[in-house]
Image 1 (spheres, one colour):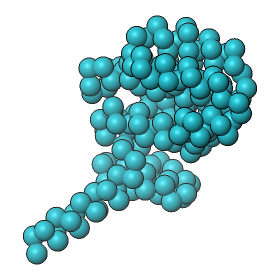
Image 2 (tube, rainbow, N blue to C red; image 1 turned 120 degrees about the vertical axis):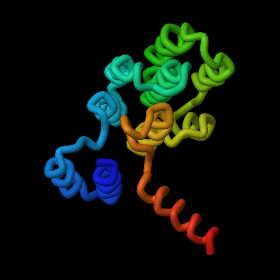
Image 3 (tube, rainbow, N blue to C red; image 1 turned 90 degrees about the vertical axis):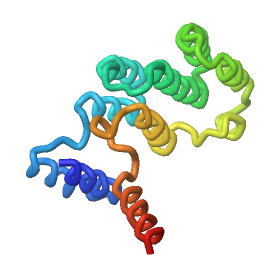
Image 4 (tube, rainbow, N blue to C red; image 1 turned 45 degrees about the vertical axis):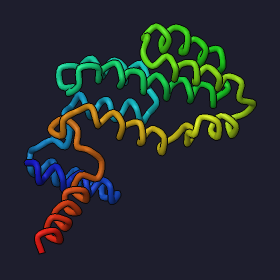
Amino acid sequence: QDIVRLIAQHLRGLGLNQTAESLIKESGCMLEHPAAAKLRSHVMDGEWAKAESDLEDLKSLIESSNGLIKMKFMILEQKYLELLEDGREMEALHCLRHELTPMKYNTERVHELSSYMMCCNPEDLRKTAHWNGKGIESRSLLIEKLQSFLPPTVMLPPRRLITLLNQAVELQKDKC
């Protein structure tokens, strides 16, 4: 099953989604835990409340003790930045004051995030925040960060097959 999951993930990465789905269906195994798949879908769609709710379903599977709070913080940070980029300053301020600040986590970063309210336009925000902006690229990066808190049996790390193949090649080189 692990090999099938690795191959299916690689096929999806190549854009061969139908082939990957066919492999998953025929093998009868799942690429990801259902709760992890929901989290991925909600993050990629920018459905932040649902993504936060998905974390509760994954709580027992998160490896590090404070992983849940870190994951929630990352989701809210993305939400805040996207609200700012969209020009929805009041909603962004609400997110900052009533969601991020009460977490009492990474207050230095919260203060940095608050300074982004002064950005004049979306380009200035992206430059100041060193952020790719709202969209697939930044949301995919968020998913990659969130994956690091979950075991590979729940959600495969990004580009796992390539990583394993590169490790095998390096090991063979070392032994020559």
